[in-house]
Structure formats: C-alpha cells, structure tokens
Image 1 (cartoon, rainbow, N blue to C red):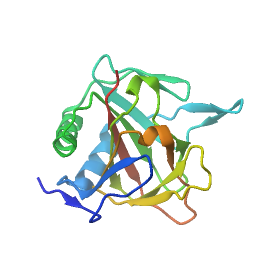
Image 2: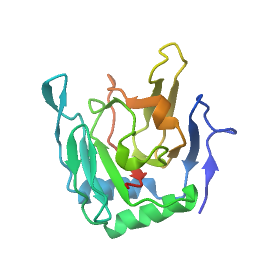
Image 3: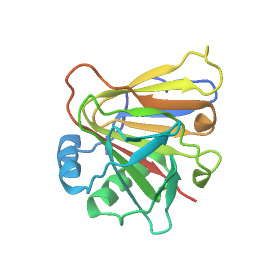
Length: 198
C-alpha cells in the first residue's frame, strides 16, 4: 500500500496532533461512486438555539453492535459493517496503527452542503480520541478554530480525494473543525470518519 505525506511535516496546531496523508492507496473514484450508490443515506434534523433545521448533508452510521453514538442530541444505532466498509477500514487501520469499531459517513452533495464548527469530544469517544477522516470526491477545506482563544491562528486544510487526516491526543479538547458552504459549483464528496466508541 502506498502512503505519501502531503506535507514534509505534519500540520501544526498548539495542543493538537495531526497526521495527514495525501493518498493511502485506495481507488478513490470507484469508492466514491460505490458509496454514493450503496449507502442508505438519510438526512436528520438538528436543533440549534431552540430552532430545528435539516442537517446540510446526508449521513450514515456503521459499526460493531455496541457502537451506539450520540451527538447533537441524536442517538445513532450502528448499521452492520458492509464488505466494502470493512475493506476501507482495514486500509485505514494499516495507516493509523490503531483500530476502530465505527464510522460516520457524511455525503456532501454539492457546495451547499456543509458541516458546522464542532469538536468530536463526546464522552463515548474517551478523553483523547483518535479520529481518522478519509475524503473521497470533491476537494473541500477543513477549518480549525480554537475553542476558547479567538485570537489563536487557526488552520485551513484542503482535503483532496483519497487523503486521510488523523486527529489524535488533545485535538478535540482544544479545537473545533468544520466545512463551509461554497458559492462556486462543486461536485459530490463523501467523508468517512472512523472512531472507537467506548
């Protein structure tokens, strides 16, 4: 399996640990089309400041039977792993040297789909979770902003198709991340975030 780091050194953020690979040897174009066609995507509502909105993307949650996960007030019961998702998970395991019992898939249909600023800091993930984020399809930019220090310089990290970003250590304690909407035309993107739910 070919692994090629996009940067000579890993992206740096104070209090964060990030590893980034431009490619991990997967056929990203084939995987994108298969996932779009095979996954039973759904759109869920989210309540923000007392108002309820449909989330601006589609999603699916897969994992081991015990890997229930709650975020944004929504309880996710995992669908059983498919052969395709297990194949992808094994490739991610090989790079991360860790194991994952679940994956959240997000489908950004076009530039109008987005992800609000958030941290993956739910108690089910433990105090220092390892989150491995695989991007397929249209390149989008992941924005990092500090949770408390508004003047702390952030990071805007482009995520090309086939790339893997691994967030470790205290990253989720100190930083939020998200993906903005785009004004320009934009093709589809699927993002798989592997994690270990306790």
